[in-house]
Length: 213
Image 1 (cartoon, rainbow, N blue to C red):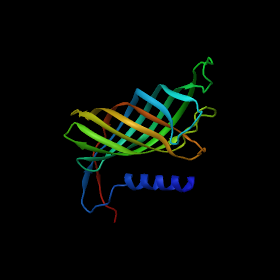
Image 2: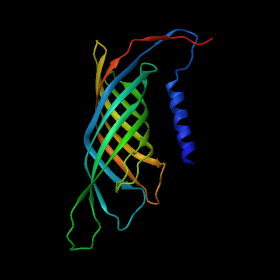
Image 3: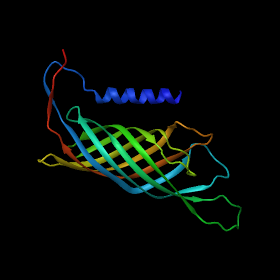
Image 4: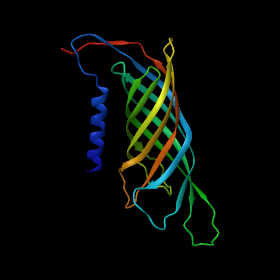
């Protein structure tokens, strides 16, 4: 499947999820916007194939800042999307012969992520969420393979909704970046990220949607 086809299918899915079904009766829909911060985890570099003689990679540090938008379809199901900026640092151990001195060195890169996921709420204060990520890697030169492509995410979280319209949540998660890379190498590296995401959202005014004639 070509990169153009993958991108086209991704945005078709985004459009179909974000367009509420038309109904003949008036109904209320709740939407929320907010900000998020993610860190407190690991960002490991992996190969999907067994590689002999490759350098070693270990997590150093990362953080993610985001703007999120949630649209409620019913009591239990919400669509979540937005945009995020991530900064990553990786430690690299060079592959050298035994008894040869070596020094670790670092690599830095950044990502712009556009997640499209579903959130399933249960027991009032908890939810599970998962979906796809469009990864955009603007880094010009890095020893880590370019991560532009389609990734995936999965998480479990807790939330609390205040009467004033504010909501707060904490969301442990797993992200796999560039599962379908747009610029693949023979042995393409993927960044696998685990962390804790915090967010604050605010409920927008309910809007009555009416079917078009």
